[in-house]
Figure (cartoon, rainbow, N blue to C red):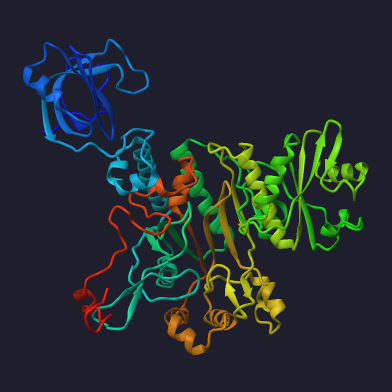
Length: 588
């Protein structure tokens, strides 16, 4: 037996027991006549004590130890004279009578501590060492617990966990597919699923009215803090439901996770907001409602003062940043440059500072102090506040203000990671028109149902009417992050064919790409809908982080590479020939 207890298990109640522990050497402190070793496993740290009275073999072994050696230690549990209240095992130590090296270790390239001295790239290359650190262990334990609670809750709600294929047909709508060449079918390719969307709908047709899966998905897209090329979804579908049924069922799941994992109770229903209202109030379809700082439309109030920036703009909007009137001219100039960045896209920034001596603004020569105070009144701004104003096209300017709102909240520390503000957003546009390709694209996916009241517009020949159709779709937003998205699906073959027609697919194209689901709908498809949650994102937010990387055991970097495996990598000529990707010897 390598161990009788873990390194996080022993307490004073175990005093005088003979125990055996095994783990990794966190550190060795040689104090002359005494040596102390911190022994670590994923359960915690226990101090080993070696004194002058310890066996000579134990002292010799201890003197040869280095960081991350794997060792086995035997001895009696004794009370520590110098207790450590920072760790659960801090009242005891082991008086070692036996010490054995199970495996020696090279000196690690960075410290295996809560705060490491290793850079991100170095720790990614040695991910198996980074995973020994407590923050990552805690992250993966949180992920495990959330997965178990999801399964428990959905099982109690009569959902069936059903696996769906990973090798499927490519359907190039939305993000790019990862493709896999088929050796047995030369020149043909599988795709890795971006989601199990069509399979879960087919399961509804098959009569499995409550399905879920914690499933790996794949998208070949540019990466950022909350995206990875392979990620995990809590994928769910229900039959014989309307939107309200879906929202109730999965608000129940969210409340269960808050309660069971974090001990946070939500007695009231989650707030709901339309897509149009979210843009108007917050400049985002995934607003962070932990703080106020709403957008205010000033368009009709500021025109006609010969200020061309406002007079020529479709929309003029503002936010009030409470207590920020002390911003210096240098800070305001820096903000003006910040909003001009390509990812924000504003042309400039106008401000009003409500200082003790009165309202001061970058547009003083166009507006009197009284007029500036009138603008401030619209935003309920008071002395000490800062008003920031942007102008331009309506949607683009609202989104820029939304980004500025988040930036100011970050600077002022308003986005507390231990505060949670869930929200449902609904009534998204069904379609987006692309000027370059002169066609509509599905805003979610081509299986999302139009709202029933918008069906006449959906069948219109007028492009502007089609653009007004709303989707019977909804997103679950938490702290400004989209955690889940779903919709009531199309279940009628005729409506589905109309969708493909609106998206510009010929009948032959639609049949080739999606014939299987159109045919399935002709055999008694029930009304159905569902939702998919980004499991990695949800775990990260519950852990108080915005980046998902620490909540995935072996993630990729921002270039989509696994620097530990050095993947992706080239394959040899034999494999290329077997896949018939080359006809002769590869030249590189």
